[in-house]
Image (cartoon, rainbow, N blue to C red; front, side):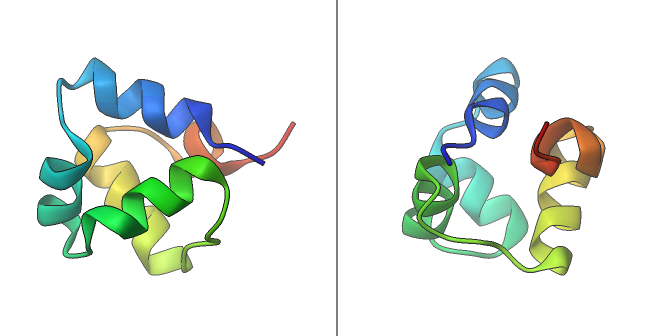
Length: 64
């Protein structure tokens, strides 16, 4: 399932995939894969992304 909430939160912070990747210590391809729903990130990566984007785990990663 695509993670449009992550994409929207990243765009809301005016960050490119590469900029977010650099901030959390992964490749741009990893961020792209998470947004496309092709990669299930570790909890540590989820937490790092949430802290960087000032969002909660529920806001970005909880499936409704």
